[in-house]
Length: 172
Image 1 (cartoon, rainbow, N blue to C red):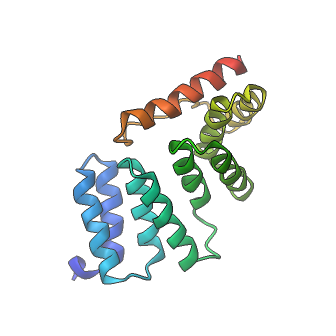
Image 2: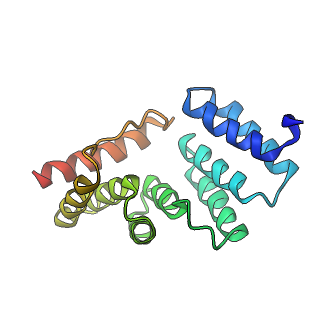
Image 3: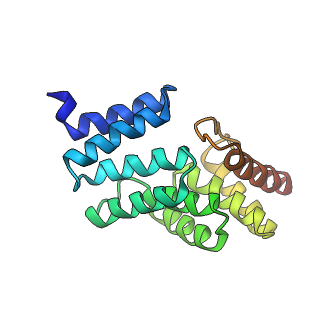
């Protein structure tokens, strides 16, 4: 029964990915979940996250926007933050900043949005704004530099971390 339940398949894929299982195989599980139920918004959400971590930001955006279309009132989950991060990884910093600002407005206590926005501003040369975002982040958590090991693409890891290093250094 579980092998045909989209919720179990998608949730298992996410959990197993977080515990270090092969991301390609886990994307396969989510794809199976979506084949079983193409209208499963959470499945599209999780697929987008996995695609982002796998180094596929374009597909991540597509899947995350599908999740938003299927469940437009769903605001529990900070989808805009993940979409913003995907634009950031594509180096589309203006689009990323716009999404991340909306994400912070929707979920002001969600640290990843602040991290991505600080790194984004730093790469845009907007160091005063990056510094201000890091200060807001530090009011929420002491962890400015996150574990980024789930990102498969080393360039994506470095883009985020280098932006955060620059923003945090500027913040003193």
